[in-house]
Each structure stands twice: as structure tokens, then as C-alpha cells.
Length: 317
Length: 225
Image (cartoon, rainbow over all chains, first blue to last red; front, side, top):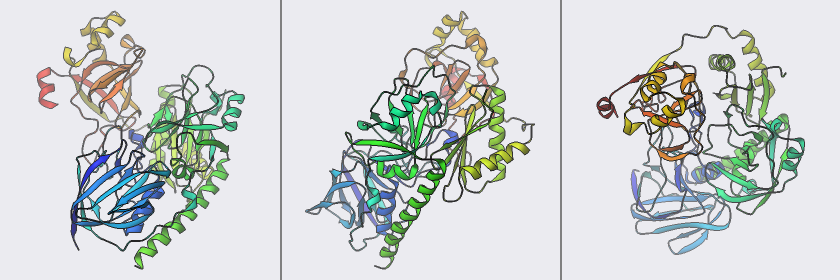
């Protein structure tokens, strides 16, 4: 079967972009891995369609997305957050698959919770790659790119799998606590500032994009002059600028930074965290390096079981 | 005084190895030595190493290994790593200093008490070392700006500075790869692409490589840009 579908983008909110599993391994050249803000959502949407887990899909921001199928037919899946999906006269939530046919529209917009969702398409999207990945690096536009109204998307090797619901995993919801290891630059803060950082509470602000999210909370200015040489930054670094404002760095983070990182959020907490919304409250909970590894392994096993069940369910239909 | 190196955990997937707290060639040489040793050793579970000025971040898969095992491996490599670094790889980067492409040249001349031609001569005289990549894809920080033209950053950043701009601030120089804001001094424009577009070698430099600048005319720049 070698079907082909052509889609026209009628509307795309800010930060809507093509994302695949990302391009890890180039941080030494200044390139973050990028990839979806919620990596579990991409894997779930793809596996529900029978795609490879890391295949390129469309990441939809709270701004939403409206498109129309001009020709052909293609299965689609929406997963991540609680978005509202309008398709062929039917309005419902995400976490399901269906088929988009010629002449039909598909609208995805912000719903009761969550900040990012993935629209996956059953087939292969014709998109630009950079360094072997279609993930969009927002600041440069490299990769598949940001999506704008008026653009067209072509999907090759389309399939139209039977519609199904995608089970919603409870661990995909944001929690009020984020596990962190302290540092690696917590020594640039007075003990009172570290205590205030851990006491919180912190509030998500609307200053957020794929690079990171700024938090509002107790002022925790670093002490002394900030003359440390820039050090590598991780997805999850909690960076504190000279004015004491904390930012959690995310998928398109800068590769290095001279501001001290008071803590680093465990990677296994980040997919759920990015689904928080402005105004949500959260606290940081410190764990040791050993606990962090244990928590990551438990999370990886849980996620593996969930995704394997999705994969097997599609194979058996 | 702390005893270097210092190992610091970074979430469940990273170990930061610090060799010092300042920008210094000897400290940076230790960073690069561990970087090379890690690349040669293929330590199980290591995903990537990210060298910076005074530290290197070792990222690993927590399903396969942990901080203690990585620290042990790194300590072992530090013990056996050869002292003599490999012969550096040299690159030539061409740069045009023409008025339209060097908006801050006059200001740098004024601030340093030199003539614009003396600023250019000083910039060309520098022998630069790729210390690290930072800020954005392909932004290679080149250490080695001669003392005579070292200036602190400008008080505020300017927006939309074109790719290929040759920038200096303090002891550092870089050739930008994207249209980005910068607070550094723009002294020229280069047609040399740090993001090469070659999938086999997508980045022109590796950390530790050396760079010389060569002056070109506006006509040559236009032909190559």
C-alpha cells in the first residue's frame, strides 16, 4: 500500500512544530536534543498507529492547530495533555485514533488540562531533517520546522488503521512535586536560599516556550559575583539568573550557561511536568543520586510496559 | 582549596566533572584530555560527553549505569590518560573587515586607542583555540583574542545580527551561525561556515582545534558568501 495524503494548515498557534524523537549526542557542538516536550505523548501516539515510536509528528501548543485534508486519507492519533479534538463533526478529547479523509477538517485546541499534545499521522511525513532528525530546534528553525497557516504537509505510505482509544497513563499527568538532585552549582547560594528553594511553593508563569519555563516564587539570588565559566546545561536544569528568578530548562535548552544551576529536575519527571499550566503550584523534592537512578529505572519500566501494551494492541488488530 | 577534579551528580543521567573554577588553558587541557579518553574508552552506558571551559558533563543512560560507576570509570581514565595532547588540528577562517560588515570596528578602535587597521592586525595576529561550543548550534568559543583588543561585552545586546558575524568580547572570539542577538563587538563577517552542511562532518571544529583568521576583500567575501 503506498497511499499519499496532502494536508493544508489553516491555523497554527505559536510554537507548533514538527518533532520526532530528537537528536541527542550533539550537545558538545551546541545543539540540544530537542524532540517533543512530552516524549511519552509522541511515543504513545505513534505506537497507537503502528508507527515507530520516534517517528515525526506534529507538536501542538496551547495555541492549537487547524488543518484540512486536501487529498487521500490518513490515520491520525492525538495524545498528550487534555486537548479538544474536532473531526468530521465529532467533538471529543485526545487519546484516540481515527482516520482523516479528503475534504475533512481536523481542529485541535486547548482543553481542560495540559500544555502540549502530539498529532501523529499513520505513514511518513515529508519533512526536512537536520543531523538525522526532523525535530525542530525552535531558535534556528532547523529540522522539520515551525508550522504556519498556509503550509502544506504531505504524508507518504499512508495507512488507515481501525480507530481505537489510547489508554491514558496516570503517570502522564503533572504532579505538584518535582524530584531534583541539588546542584551542580548549589554552592553559589546561601543555605537559606537553598532552603527557600526547597520550601517553595513555586508557581508556573506564562513565560514559557520550548527552551524553558520561568517560575515565580521566593527570591533566591545567587551570592557574590557571577564570574564562573559557562558550564554544560541539561534538560531539567533549574537555572537562577542574577535577579533570583528560577527557570527550568526544557527541550530546546541552551547548551551551556554561566548562571548557577541550583538543582536539576529528574528527566523522568519532565514529560509530566511540561503539561503544567501557568498558575499551577509545585514544590521541588531533593533526592540523592542513587535514589534518582532508582526512580528513573522504575519509571522506565512502567513506561516500557505501557508502550509495549500499545504496540501489541496495534499488532493484534 | 578544593581538590580537583570534583564530581557532581546532575539528575539521574549526568555527572559533571570539574577541573577548576576559571577560564584557563591548563584547566581546559585537563577537560579535553578526559574528553578524548572517554571517546576512546567507550564506557558502557555513556551517551555523550560535553566539554566546557573548566568542566565536562558526562551524560549516561541510568538504566545501564549510575553516577558511581561513571565516576569510577572517569577516575580510572584520569589515571592513565596520556599527558601529551595530540597535535592540534588547524583551521583557517576567512574574514572581511569592510566597513559595511564590521559595524563595531570603529568603536573597538576608539575604546582601545588603536586605529581600525591596528585592531584588524591584532585580531589577525591571534592564535585561537576552540574551547567549547555554547549558546546556540555551532557557536564555537575561540579563546585567544590579543590583550590589546580585549573589551568587556557591550552594555546591551543588539538584535538580529546576521550569521557569519565575527564577534569579540574579552579573550573570546566567535563566528556566529544564526541570526541572533549579541552583546559582543562585531568586527567583521566571514563566509566560512561553522555549520558545514556536510552530513559526514556537520561542524567545522572540534573542541581543542586551533583557528587562524585570514583577511579577504569585499569582492572575495561576496563571491564566497
